[in-house]
Length: 74
Image 1: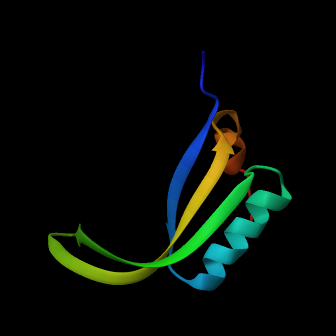
Image 2: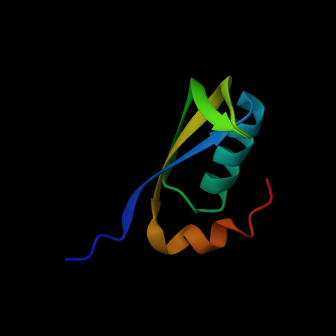
């Protein structure tokens, strides 16, 4: 049995950006559902450790639709 669907995690810099992306994915039927949550990310960038507030999108989609995401303008 082949699994053709799953969850993709994406982060956005702001709530507005996250909401625009989520709405666009659902409107274009590229995601069945998108959940938004505020998070804090700690990461290394250019040799320094950073801590930033971000929004995480939990995107439920079919893997076959991922290529179509590239053309999406939100």
